[in-house]
Length: 390
Image (cartoon, rainbow, N blue to C red; front, top):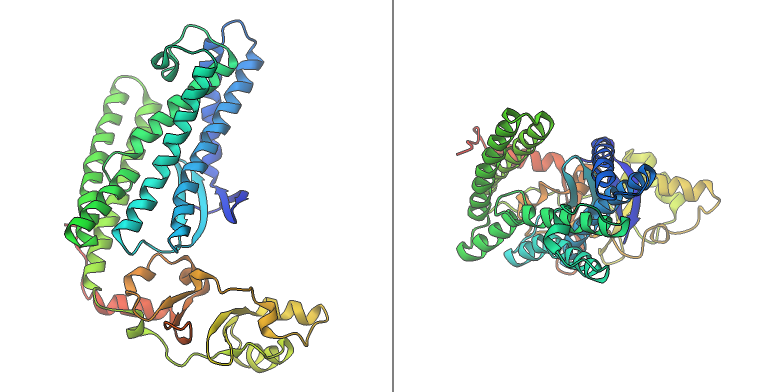
């Protein structure tokens, strides 16, 4: 997910992207809805049905983005970075820079998406009431004999968001309902790994149920629908199994922190140094693509990248200081605390992209750098043999 992603927009500074598979789903949904609205709109032209179908498909994906934005903004409020929101074959995904560290944060982030979908559903139902629709069940199932474009469009959005809400709240990982179960079990037992395994086992049960449903649908003659259920079940099964394996990893890594593996003497650039001197003394000397920057008392100011230095020098500003080419605040995803458990780094987008994370103490002073290679060595040392799924 996210591989070959095409950027569609940015909301609240968060990249909204779509994988190529999303465009396939968009086309198929428009094709399907064109037939549905062609029947439901009665005396209206085929062009009208097509326009409503396009609007319905696009607004559905807008509602998915809003669902994921709910997860993302709550994660951000709880100190977790968000790298992007991706639309793909099975919907949307908010990509966080790290996992929640408490069951309360996990619960809030997991519940935020369904809460947004519920709000959209309520708004659609209110819109139907304003349009004079009296039979809500008929509208939600698009079972009316004929209707207007406005009623048909709002009815479709209400019905599909109801499906998204109910499906997402199923208590099975990796769905939102499964994550909520994990948070509750984590709170009750005090063990995140036990909560993860409980939710993942439920996810595996759901996956087998979906694949069985897919086989049944195929036998009934709906090959496309059956294959969709089979693929969805396979995806959920793989995600659930991955969660179980990840929880075993975490147990074996318990007690290992960033301080145990970090480099305690990183090369740093003083914030008051000119960019020309930084280029000569650091980038040309060490041939690294970036360096951490500190102030006079060792506080971490941010990451200085070679392209920023070259840009300032080439634009005729060689005398400005390193601190001036940095942002006002270091990226929250670029540093961690000394006591951060090593397993929390496994999902870090910054660690994968930059190749390292800065380590700071309680006063924000830089006290080390942990690289992706150090994390890999820690994993190899902590897991000497194969990890079982059971």
